[in-house]
Length: 294
Image (cartoon, rainbow, N blue to C red; front, side, top):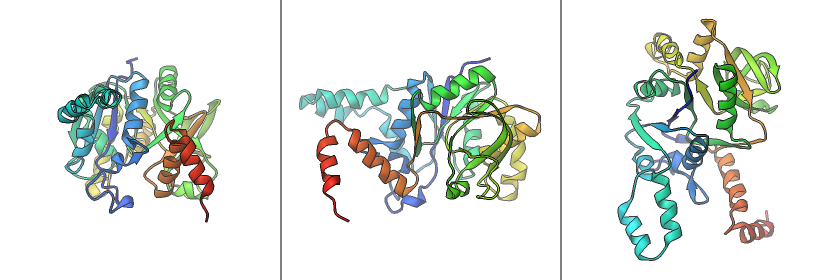
């Protein structure tokens, strides 16, 4: 069984829920205190030992590429001004990982975004995370997924337990036998099932490890989706795998807190929570919040 060495982050969407802020700025670059959302995702990936990150972008996402590149003029200014702590932080960003950029020329769904990265991924398992949300967990979400992949050798879906009816209209849900604590042998995977049709309380919100056969499964799904004027989603490929008799497992990410930063309210919650954890802001920001009147 091959080691998980590569990750894909689809980041070509328009971020319409945050317009007009995202008219010229990618939603993945919205800041949580002093780091963009996507950097939290990248740091999680790197910390888990992933060697290469493939960012699937569009023509309007140059800011993401620039963020993870060197900025020699800025570095020279910081060095000249003696701001060596900031210089170290800025340089570290471009040294986090081996970044590869591929373009998704049309918005044809997250499954299509994964297909766009096929040649770079090759015949290997691949991690896929979104660029506008993340899960804070211990061990990290990615480490928990890799541990499950190394145990079962199958496609791994990750999620959280939720009993909120509104979540059934936003996320995919899985059903099947629970073969270990928080591990489901997936028999059913339904996208946005609604409150009356969710097969369990495990919502697959973010984070997947796919075996290499996901690419053939997605290709086989193209005539039924893109071929009919619809978008191709990763869910289509996963269901094709199961129809072919391939095993898929879903795991609950333990000790976790999900941050859906593609949602305005949840994004604001994340900013507040991370602001209260920030060494330079915690005391003053906490006092400010206490004094707010509604």
